[in-house]
Length: 360
Ligand code: SF4
Ligand code: SF4
Image (cartoon, protein in one colour):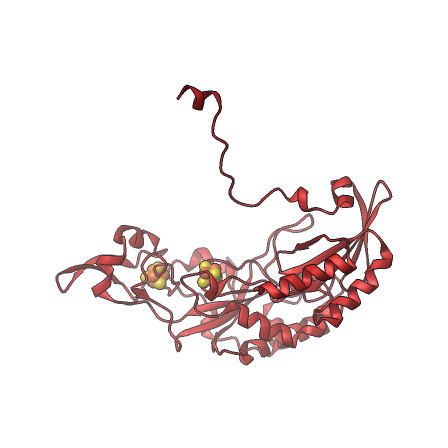
């Protein structure tokens, strides 16, 4: 006991390791002291430090869920053609940092010869960020990584060229409530019916008070069904969000027919120049149609074409829609504006400002 007090146990570390140990030495030396950066070609950035040091970054897209052979191949390219330092961006691109500009072109060529696409910088459509889906999670309604793969196959030229008015961030999300984030275009799951309850299992599997507490519209009540403790849902109140399904899997909400995709547009985090803007629903009830999701991809391409043809230089999608207005957005994209775009939930007074049609 006395010895334990004299020498406390070393805490067991969890979470991310210290990133500095993996940084390129030029980045470590110039940390916080960068002066300016340039964009010499799509997929390549040049950062110059106040010390005069420079570092070149080459960015390539990956499929995010990587097998070990692909990771080894990417690392081998970094060892042979780069300086042996890589990092992954939040959108699953890999970036190679080199301090010698002569290494940039051979590195780009090695990546492209191996089948990776160099791009995703500046005013391109960068890699679609997506959530783990089937691999790690218990509630997905679609395979978000499959949606990403099939869309990026069709948007590949927009990734490797910088032809958009400004950068475009697309996100996908394989349920309606959790991961995913603000995106210029977001492709999310949309449930269209309330959960179906397997009353035989609720008492064994679910902690009923926490399921009741989980519902954002207070639609769930405890109930006795066939003499067993269970739950019931007031379907008039239910907004089909799916939040009850993670803590209570017997409240099954996923379904091949009624689980759809929806597309939201115009999300942007706040930055030094502007406040955050919230994405708004523009297309609903799109079939969740694996393995290529052609209906969702066609709508995303239509939105991108209208943005590319009509926005001014440097306007993000939210800036463009703000300038032209939502009615014009629907005209230009030829998307139908339907009653499903109108938030008619009884608490909607608070949330109408998040829909495309009205302001309080
Ligand atoms: S979006 Fe939903 S289903 Fe997909 S990984 Fe995140 S929590 Fe799980
Ligand atoms: S789907 Fe959402 S709104 Fe409906 S009962 Fe479950 S938690 Fe409540």
